[in-house]
Length: 191
Image 1 (cartoon, rainbow, N blue to C red):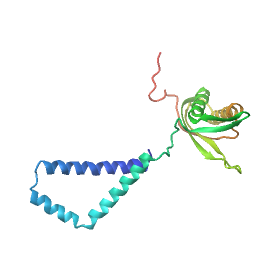
Image 2: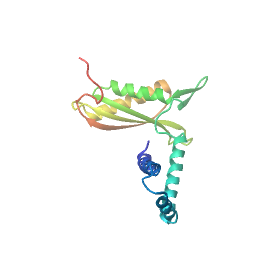
Image 3: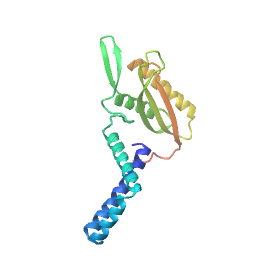
């Protein structure tokens, strides 16, 4: 979920929390019926009420559209790269490619932890074919050269994708999130 969606959802939840508190107060008869009706009529006559109602309606529609939208940054099992073989097309799951990139990065000396994201982007060629775009976020050891680690991962991935998958010149971005020799978060070392 994107940051914008989280912010909208936060304020949306606060608004519905306030409505729930008002409903509980009305049900418990803390205020008299005449007073509640008077305040309700006053609120309905204000343009601010209409403005807030329109904003809440727009937020509701936006969140509803986001919930039914099939566009997602994460890799789903249904997405695939289609490669043309001698006997026809072959579908290679993006999850399989993600797992391959994870395995290559973790087997590289100096890599402590890795998170892999993959999405399809248009190639710079004339046919504008879709190619996988890999983004790796690494935690690397303090005792290894970061440039060597990056070059090694890119070379191995490029070699693997070229030889075994048939994808030439994939886009591979490497971001070093941290340089540390501490154990990866959430993983306990068993002795």
